[in-house]
Amino acid sequence: MKDGENLEDGMAGAKQPFLPISMSERGNSSSGGRARFRGSDATAVFCTLIVAMGPLQFGFTNGYSSPTQDAITSSLSLTVSQFSLFGSLSNVGAMVGAIVSGQIADYIGRKGALVVAAIPNIAGWLIIAFAKNASFLYAGRMLTGFGVGVISFTVPVYIAEIAPKHLRGSLGTLNQLSVTVGIMLAYLFGLFVSWRLLAILGVVPCALLIIGLFFIPESPRWLAKIGKESDFESSLRALRGPDADVSVEESEIKIAVEKNYKQRGVKASDLLQKRYALPLTIGIGLLLLQQLSGINGIMFYSTYIFKSAGVSSSKVATLGLGAIQVVMTAFTAWLMDKAGRRLLLMISSGGMAVCLLLVGLAFFLESHVSGASDETGYSVLALTGVLVYIISFSLGIGAIPWIIMSEILPVNVKGVGGSIATLTNWLTSFLVTMTINLLLEWSSAGTFWIYALVAAFTFVFVAVWVPETKGRTLEEIQFSFQRS
Picture 1 (tube, helix red, strand yellow):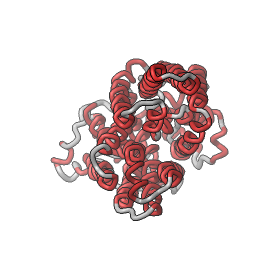
Picture 2 (cartoon, one colour):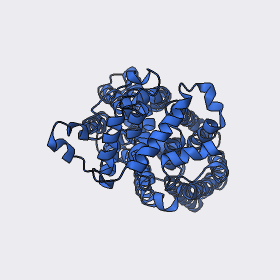
Picture 3 (cartoon, helix red, strand yellow):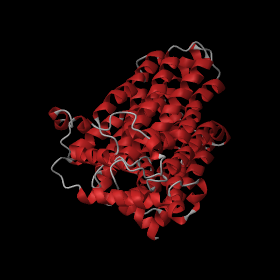
Picture 4 (tube, helix red, strand yellow):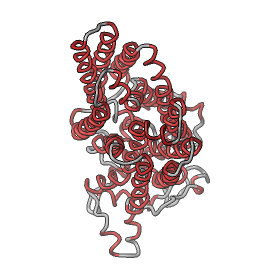
């Protein structure tokens, strides 16, 4: 591969980094520039913490509707259906963002895509903060959703592409950890500040993200893909350190890029080839099942669920739910590269299935058996079941589908395939969010039992189809699908 060689016969030349490629690039003209990035695991962690501002925004958006429902409906005289629409419009915006996320990230780089995501997020929160009626709320929610849709694809891909293989699982889990922190912060601040001030606070993560992006390198794999060899080498050395031997990793990336671009101009029909169809099916399947287990519906309407179960301090219980999710996701980040993806996914989905069965049983008994003492026991069972469900979700299903999606797709189809997988996730999230109230009105017990069946199927899906990716380079993982 020659310096600046166009791997896509003229098309790559149109693709340019939206931001400076890395701080190490400035070292070419300034001795102080190179010193900013000495490489090592600490550099990968630092880069991950910067881009984690994106999923922090993601979580804050998800958590915003729960503590603000009463205040917003009262302040703007909204009906329940109007507020439900407001809550679900973030998913609609995210679907639009998901559709274009892969193309944006492929065209202007992973860092550039995050800037494109951050700007409408900031605008959306300001529109919500100063909203005079429902129309302003809807517009703001759509904009924040669009940004979240782009973020949900770009951040896990960036982390997977810059992380060393022995840290990729743990750093990838920080994506979901940031989502849970964002949800918890929305719940926490929602107890003390007005809904308008809470919306203004939503501006902070993306503002920090934009600033931080100027201090981290671009993905070396994306730079290799567009033929910028000198920039690719600079970025990789900035991440691994000037004294690190990156020759093997560098060679693997170049070989993978050159091999993939022998099939340049991949079309949608090409995704049906086995070498693409199998990893795409696994990626889409995991992200689809993640949402069909009901997680977003349960988190969005957790306060209502706890009230229905007879829990008096429902807002405090919801905050506790968020805190538990943060702690368990942090534990998963530590455990990820030790236990492996498959084992954690099976423990997670199996635990979720059992817990959802118990929550459904609590609601069934509560509606069919009377008596104050009995109702207290059913409330405890429902609360315990939901809390352990969140723990189980956080152990695997929450973070790992995004990690695996970013690991198994070849670089030449990652934009198209990743967009399809991300769109599937958000479309399913939208359907779950829109239908959970209807399902709960139909049968609270039946709702949780349906979700339990999905979790049980997820266990089987993982056992049969999902490969272990722990301790393998991205190129090794992707070559294994070509040989299968």
